[in-house]
Length: 266
Image 1 (cartoon, one colour):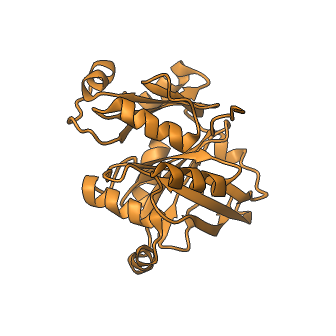
Image 2: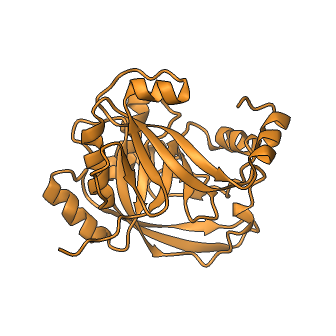
C-alpha cells in the first residue's frame, strides 16, 4: 500500500454573533483582520491570515433568511454552524479545516467510513486585500462528523481558485504571530475522536493522543488532563470540543508587552 501524506491544517472556524465585536477583540490582541467576506449562503467572515498559510475564520450570520434557505437546501456548512450556536452559543470554536487537493476523493472516503456529514459544497466569494484590491476565491468542501456530535465538526477544503491577492500586509501582525502550532480539543473519549480526526485528515491515528499534520498538531485531552495543562475547567463530555489554539510568535517578550499595553490578561 502506498502511504499518503496527511492533509495539512488549512483554517479554523470561530463562530461569533458580531464581526464588528470580534474585529475589535482581535485587533486588541494584535492581529490584522481582513475586510469582511460575504458568502452566498448567508454567512460572512473576517479572517486573520498567517505567514504559514493557515488562517482563522471568525464567522457570523449576515442574512438569516438566506441562511435558512441554505439549510433547507442541505448546506452542511450553514447547518452545522447553526447547530453549534444552538448548542453552545454564539461565540466559540466550531470546526477544524484541512487542506486537500481532491475534495471528491475525501468525500468518497468519508462516505465509505460512515462519517460523511452530508453533501459536498462548492462556492465562490470575493476576496479583498488590505489595500482594497479584490479577486474571486472558489472552494469545494467535504464534511465529516460523528453522527451524534453537535459541538464540533471537521471538513476538507479544496481551493479551486486562489485569488491573485498579496496577503503580506494582512499577515503582518503586531503581536508577532506567524502561524498555528497546535489545536487543542477535549473529549472523554479521546481515542475515538483521534480516529475521527485521522480519518478527516487522512492521517495516522497510532499516537492515541494527537494527530500530527504536516504543519500543526491536533491534540485531544480528557477534561481532567485539559485542566491539568491549562488550569481551566471543562465539563466532562464524550463529544469532541475544540477549546484552544497555540500560536507561533517571532518574539514572546514583544507579544507579552503588546498584550500588557492593551490591558489584555495573559
